[in-house]
Image (cartoon, helix red, strand yellow):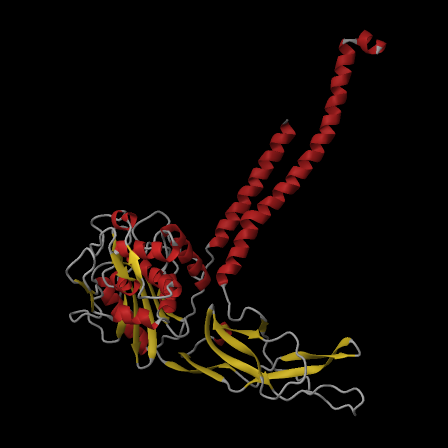
Length: 483
């Protein structure tokens, strides 16, 4: 009995250690690259968490508590709009407002007075979502796109993980306060970076006003005004700002994510835990800081240095035989404007090339590509083509050299990935780690512990049986002697 209790306690201790380790792996630290900021005046802002990101590359130019977990409020709707744009086939399709969409939101929260059974086009609903921050619209869009709010939230969380927003977890599509509905300034910046890839999204957040035409239940036009003061005429107007999304709840404070462009440079500012109108002044200060930073062209890909080779196979006398290797090269180098002093060791390369080729191959045939990443963000790519032609090998002919297998001694180390260059998903890697730590490790420990326990139990059972037999013999010696 004592041994069994000891085994049980040991198992619980190991399981607890495993679960703690797994939890610590769920929220890894995000390294934020630093750019050279000499000769730039210091920043002054009051918001708790801020991130300034270069939109083209995803490079973080400045951050304070950028990976600190906070409540997002209505900037959640950036992800809501992104999911809608990625899944809606026709923006002219009409959505109907359910009783849950209309009545499950607090009466004092943002809304545009939609009624049960009333309909809007998805296009109109997106304006109501982003300009007026209408909560009932977010729920109606979720139900229409995914069949239920719960299914839609699942899509939001999967998309966040795939984008690398690993500190973000959504509970609803509106941003209303709910336990566990959290994000970070960094995560919201990369979500906005993905959203602005959609021209319709940019048009929506840039609109100062939008009118929703009369519907079945509303005979009057609904006039929607953008709540973002940075694009409205007034004290906080900023001509470089294209648009953004505001948010506020008591628990989150004021939040704001902004997309801006000046002289061809695009920046994203994410501000959480601020005060009104401090989020607007803080955003303007961060934009001025970012646009004043020195940038310079940086060679992110050297075509001469990266010349991978692929084996060339041919069927000779019924045997698949390697007859040479094909050298791949890119046509041009790739340059990108990056902050002065940028650490090029942050660059990572993914090759997508076939594992084998068969002749004939013409010179210049595109056979693969190389993608250049900064952290999880792909910032450039180049097609890889055959450096020379490769003919079918004829054994009876005079041997002719095929394409030489050139390997540059100074060629940098490459991270080879033949299949996932276009489907890069840090969320999948994170999921694999979580699966191993949360499920596989404890189950493996449980199996080993159970096996040991069974073996020891079997041994002890034989001993107990013998002791019981001896005890009965001592008590009834005549009986067992007769037997």
